Image (cartoon, rainbow, N blue to C red; front, top):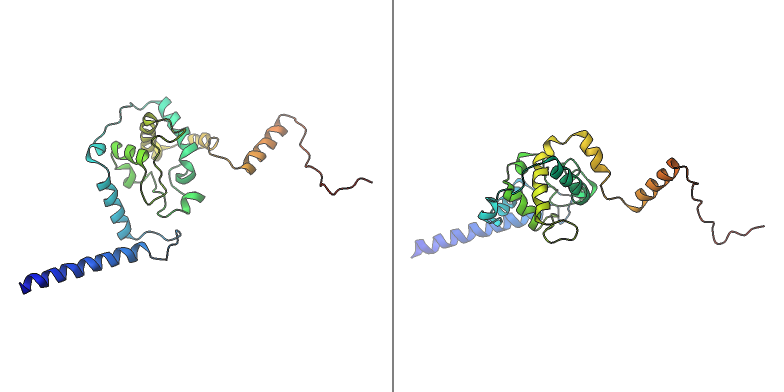
Length: 207
């Protein structure tokens, strides 16, 4: 009986130590999103993601055969919806991506490329909890399940993306008001339109 009690105490202390270690790891550098996840956090997160994806979803096959048309659609869709965090090249080096915790993964690396098509599809559709990755299933403007399967093909293509493809993608990246105004001024200049004058101040008095 004493040995059993001692064993229970040892297991309880070990579990408590593990819990404290996890909390300390997750809260290192306070709650700042500037911190970089520890190796322990990365290991726990990847295992949790693997366990969270249903086995039948992991084994799902892409119903679409890769085609130039589908790749182009997915490339432009990625530029418009995903590149704000992941970057056009999939590297994740963007202003938004750099401010997330954890940072978006580099889609070109084996950690992503070694996932099955079914896993990639499930992540696109359902997102990843406690990260910046949203669920795109039934989201307005996404285009449905076929669009997600096209994106799976594009993610496979990301390591081989060409400079010409990236240039085209830049035209489809979301633009802020200042960028749109600058673009309009350039178009007006190229088309020979008269530059718009800034409105005069309300307290300007004519002599």
